[in-house]
Length: 380
Ligand SMILES: *Cc1c(COP(=O)(O)O)cnc(C)c1O
Image 1 (cartoon, rainbow, N blue to C red):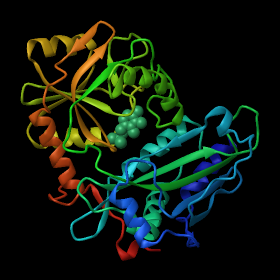
Image 2: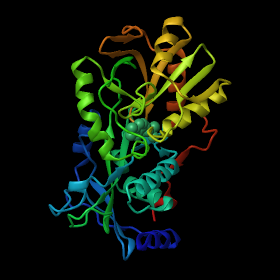
Image 3: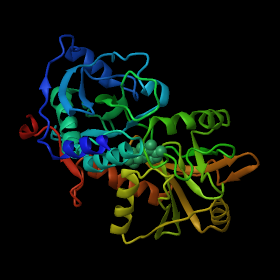
């Protein structure tokens, strides 16, 4: 009860103001350029980070930008024991004129609020979420690379950091944003992947946390992901936990089926599927092209029969990190659907091109999806 009151009060108060304490050990321009020449994914981090504290009594407070560095956590911090944690993932893109933009950040802000509700964490107001992104880009904008298909990956996350081993929603929480330069996901062109059917494992169940972006879902996906890798597959596909017949999604990406040349089908949101921003954007772009978009139940049988009959012409996965990944084949114990050597589908690649063109400012942003991050007025 008292937690609800605090959360309500938090949404009604004035926007947070951020204090900025520049790092005293920021990398030199030469060191940064060396990293940006081949950043990989998720292994290099910028010079600063954002922190915002929350307590039950005070709500959100003490928003700050400081040097990037380790967190001090008491070993009894609740997140370390009960996994009360959520995260987001979005990117900052450099356009040809040098300006820096991000894609539909309000969607990530709203999703983080939904994830927070499910994990009994406090909701960060959307304007504070978006401001936290602007703040890190304001200090670390030079870390946004400019080579094709590169970006600065932004990782907001929230953890329960109360020192308490009792099992209940924490009364002390931290929100952070870190940033990591990301190279092109596919080197030498977009390559179709094989994916593995996790027959013995589920990532989510009815009433579970499948629709929340929380670390626990990923922990549950790692063992089947290892099985996928052992079988030569890049990613793991999960069926619904109840019947084991319906397609849910991959470990960290949503999935789409092209039927013929004019219909796009994706599993409807059932509560066990994560609602991707990329998924939503692709449905819009497909409708704009005059395609019919269906969000509905898709069974494994439909996939097998559809590929066999030729009704299903292309399959792809999508998410912020890789944008769109063509799926050549689904493999499992005693199962192979599709041709492992199939080239990327035409519609898959056209949608991928259109989406990245919008993100990188090469095509008009007709849906108002871009938010500028480096405009002077955003530097509070
Ligand atoms: C983040 C995520 C996605 C993709 O979401 P985007 O907003 O498109 O990046 C899909 N599935 C899972 C399980 C995820 O965690």
